[in-house]
Image 1 (cartoon, rainbow, N blue to C red):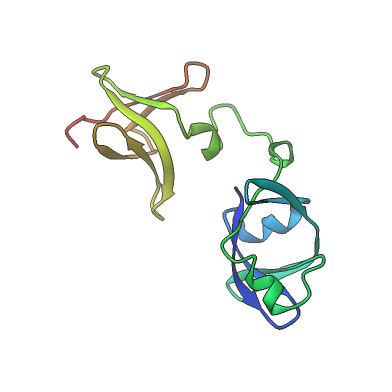
Image 2 (cartoon, rainbow, N blue to C red):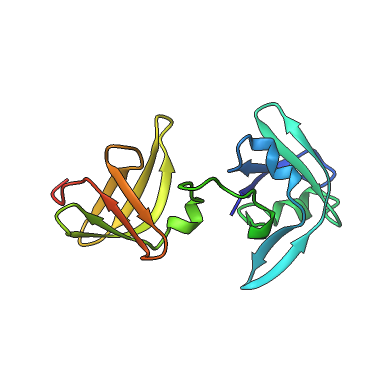
Length: 160
């Protein structure tokens, strides 16, 4: 997921987009966009888009008024993974970390990554096991990410 349609802009069917890309306006460079409505995937064609103050606005083909645009609010925007830039060795997309097992140095399984959050200072793994752990995704807490083993090794006490 690269963003969410989160508002209306004007009267001609434009929508506001909350973008997860860095920088935010990069969401407009990915085409096509995909959405899921009632468990059915659909492709959206973006005919125009721009930064508008602190948000991104876009005009979706065949969405021509506020009522049509209002029906799109809350819908997540996806792209094909092949559109994403290749990462350097040791870098991972958040999507690749979700579902990985998180184990501490004592070999205690804390749980699985449910999500990640950007706190502004750093990213945090939200790990769900017997209890929820919020593990900073930075050294010295992050020791190793092993995609092949589907596991993340952390220096984190299970009682935190």
